[in-house]
Image (cartoon, rainbow, N blue to C red):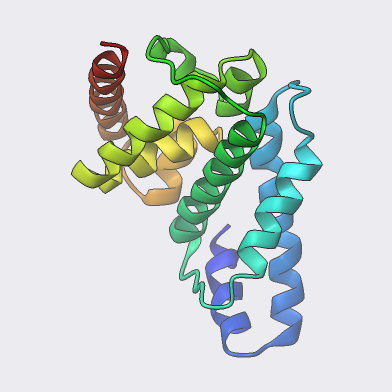
Amino acid sequence: MSDITELIGRARAGDAQASERLFTALYDELRRLAAGQLRGDNLMRSTSLVHETWLKLANHGSLEITDRSHYFAIAARVMRQIVIDHVRARGAKRRGGDIHLESLDTTAMQVAGQGHDGDVLALDDALQRLGDVDPALASLVEMRFYAGLELAEISSVIDRSERSLKRDWRRARAFLQRELGHAAT
């Protein structure tokens, strides 16, 4: 994956061949992320999620991905936006407050696929508030819950120890649980 950073730099400098190789490498990574996100769910096909994510990444002219860590953070955020847009499009009528944070160990599409659209939307609102307080924790939740990455994968992507990420994961879950508890009352 360290080639990604090099390819990003060469593509930004105008190297057409690097741009093509970057497309292939990023597309494969997006397919892997989407497969992890959708794990057997029929709500949305992984190819659709990959294509929508790739289109958003590729067609955003002012987007400058600087390195591998930045790429994963942006891809996770784009997948989050797609999932939330998909849930909203299905016509969610209510906001839930009873999401069980154990489900954060699954993926957003799995929760939505179980008919918990309100939970996904309430979590998105709580995640917005977490992002206002601690953007790094919000990014961790996006990579874990929306992109389906394991803590070990996130650790290698953002170059932090898995132990510190586990501590941050507990803090993020506690914050979200508190926020979702307030939404229910």
